[in-house]
Length: 87
Length: 285
Image 1: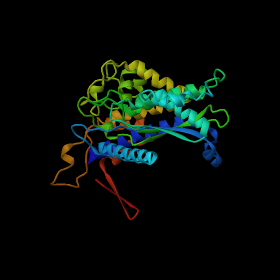
Image 2 (image 1 turned 180 degrees about the vertical axis):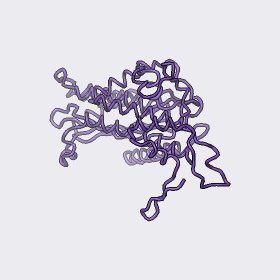
Image 3 (image 1 turned 45 degrees about the vertical axis):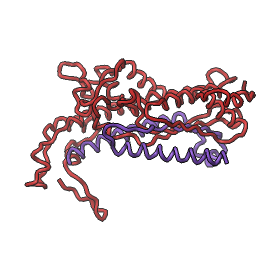
């Protein structure tokens, strides 16, 4: 249990560092008007989604479950969109 | 080029290409003034992250055509984020030497009148946290640990407690959190470390902030070295016996790196568990 405490602390710390980095870098690159409510609707944007792909290792963990679940969902959405477009 | 419809026409006659796709998104954005989205999916190691980078690069290129030199600084900054994100969020897996262990959504903003790159916002999803404390054989922890140990100057490493008594830097294999992993062939930790460092500087990180990050990274490595007295926990005879830490000097080092004034606080956190019942914190060993 002590090991668990130690490892959770380490994991959380790394996660926080990572989140902080993203936040910090966003501050440098995001448009200043972002908090303006009108801006959000008017803005021209291109969104780019890059997520982890399907994975199957010798031993899989909860993370692999999440990753593959997201991919399944995404695939479903994609197929639905294609069928919708072809109709 | 800017007004041409060419990119829209070539799309069906050729196999798909990142450039064509990015161009299509950009010209559709201009023509229809509608938001566009690019979804990159595929199996692990297929090249999604690289494709995403190619798309971003090409989009910023396209949007800066005809602009003044120096005008696309923001575009350069957007692209410059990548080394940091990869350093902290990518790791070697059995399938891929540089596998993203997180999802990301980059929203690029374009100026309403000129269609120039205006800014961007990155959102990250689900970083694989278990990798911080456990690495499978032939895989590695996050790159940044290796970059720091192999590429940082010795003075800074010493401040972080990452040098041996003889003055040399510790190796990755000296740390419990990394020791089970393997190596990434052909890596130049020094070069990679410099790249991450330079990016942080370019992105307006202050020297204190950068140092703070290294302290956190180092603290995580040290945390893995903390050992507990096995007799003091998981003992069926005395399940509530207080735990003991074998090497308290490391706890003190971690506390110092993280700016805890009082190392005993950290000891308490490590040895006890908190249950919150009816908004009351109950600490138990």
